[in-house]
Length: 124
Image 1 (cartoon, rainbow, N blue to C red):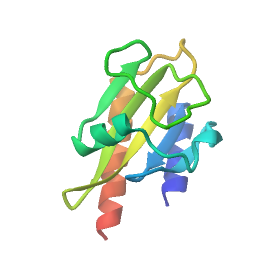
Image 2 (image 1 turned 60 degrees about the vertical axis):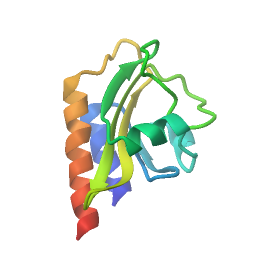
Image 3 (image 1 turned 135 degrees about the horizontal axis):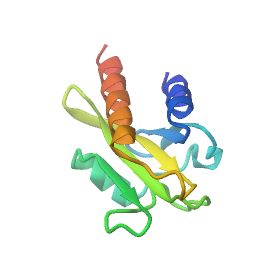
């Protein structure tokens, strides 16, 4: 189910779309196949635990790699935790490698909607 959702999310946003569980990347679309199955970083885990959504660009104070051993150069990232019955179960992430395609609040709203939907699906 997550795979189908990231494909749609990537198609709409034109960016790399990712769903992670609490430990690793479980679905990827829009490029970035190297992310699939990789462990998430402690920084991402911390953001998810704090239930914080964020939008950042490379060079920003709050920018960090989402996976260990990231091979692609990421310029922008948007992250939103997935909550199900009050528990954090993962995150929806958008990544951009082109510095000409700056992310904005629309990207953050898109992944918040995705995270809300995925969280509700897990409750059923």
